[in-house]
Length: 198
Image 1 (cartoon, rainbow, N blue to C red):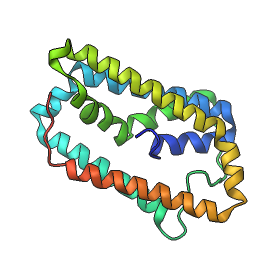
Image 2: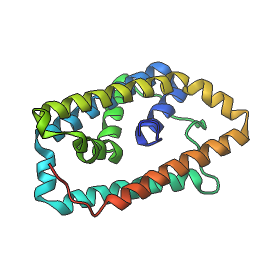
Image 3: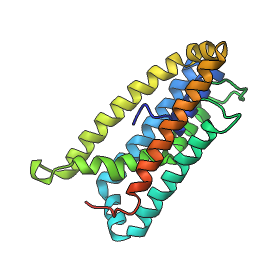
Image 4: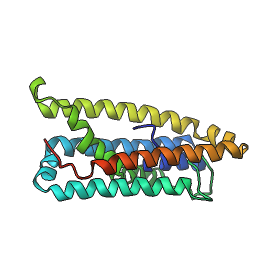
C-alpha cells in the first residue's frame, strides 16, 4: 500500500521536484506526525466510535473509495498528469511544508483506512493487549512508509528528469499509477458495506 500513489506521495514528490530534497523531507516529517496521530486515535478508541455509529465508518470508506477513484481518473483521463511530471509551484517556508505534510496525511483516506480498517484485522486479543499490538503494527507501518517515501523524495528529481525526456515512459507511468489507484478504489468500494469491528 505504501507504493500505491496517493495524496501523500503526490505532495511529497511535487515539493521535492519544485523546492528540493530538504523541502520533501520536511514535508515527509509532517506526514509522519499525521501517521502517529491516526495510530494513536485508532488505538485509543476511535474504532469504538465507528462500531457504535456504523454509517460513519461506511461513509468514511465510501468517501475514501471515491477519492481514490477520482485520483485514478485524473491520471488516466486524456491530458492527465503523471506523478513525476513537473510543474511550477511557489516556494513554501519550512513551517508551511511541515504543516501541509501533516494536513495532507490527516485528510488522506488511505492513511485513515490503514489504521481504522486494515491494521485492526491483524490484532489478535489472545496474544496480549490489543492497544500494544496496535501501536507495534502501526509503528512498523510508519517505519516502512517513511523509509519508502524518503527514498522517493530523494529520487524524485532524477526520476522527473528521466521521464521529462521520455514521453512514452511518462504515459506508461501515468497509466500504471491510474490503474493501481483504480484497483485500490474498487477493492475498497467492495468493502464499503462491511461494518467496523474491534
